[in-house]
Amino acid sequence: AKVALGAERDETPEVADSPETMMVRSEDISRVTAALQRLSEEQSKVIRMSFIEEQPHGEIAERLGLPLGTVKSRIRLAMARLRDLLDD
Figure: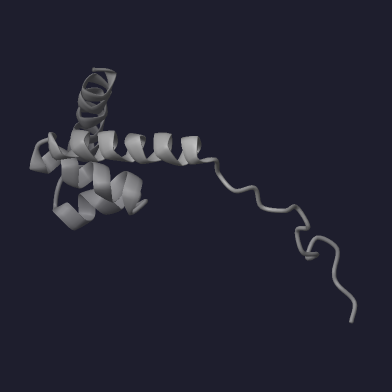
């Protein structure tokens, strides 16, 4: 059987993360999770919908019954708050 160009299997071996890398990643996840919990419910909801569920801002606005500008403003304010919390 012929294989089309570009459809060949990637032969690059996977490299396992070092224990140090896995520990740092776990610490980062814990810090971000803790910071998300410190946001207001309104800010946390739009951040989760935008970055975790990967929904477009327009869809978030529609689902929450909010103007698009309000969604964008909440995301901007939440990101500034997250930056402050994670800089500590």
